[in-house]
Image 1 (cartoon, rainbow, N blue to C red):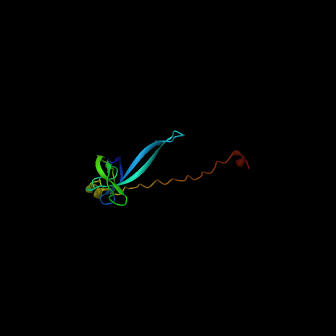
Image 2 (image 1 turned 90 degrees about the vertical axis):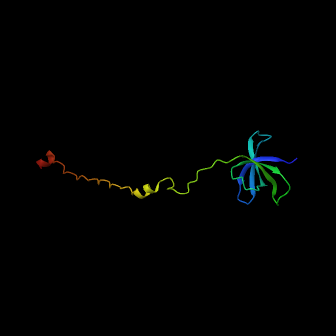
Image 3 (image 1 turned 120 degrees about the horizontal axis):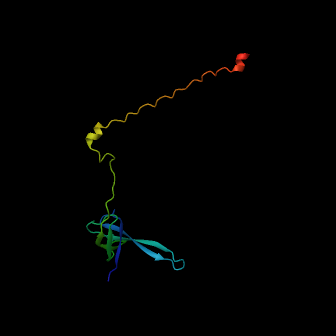
Length: 128
């Protein structure tokens, strides 16, 4: 009976090959702390169906290459499409881009410097 492993696709760059990452949660025998371990398996994907982030099951098969010992069994869950912004003006219609003018910056009002008014002469100065 062949092994069946479930994991996430971490790479699909090679032709007809995917890299599946399998995470295992373990508990330390002394400290009772849980930690994660992962392994990577290369699997054969004949139709290049699986994409990065997909949850897949792979089945053990005969050696297909130096590192490939598994083949894609089925795709359980597709990865959510993330938003990738390729152009900053992608959502703005062309008319708005043409009409858009540079914002006019109003100059700041210059602060007026008040000249010191001559101090009033005190009575003592008048007497002298």
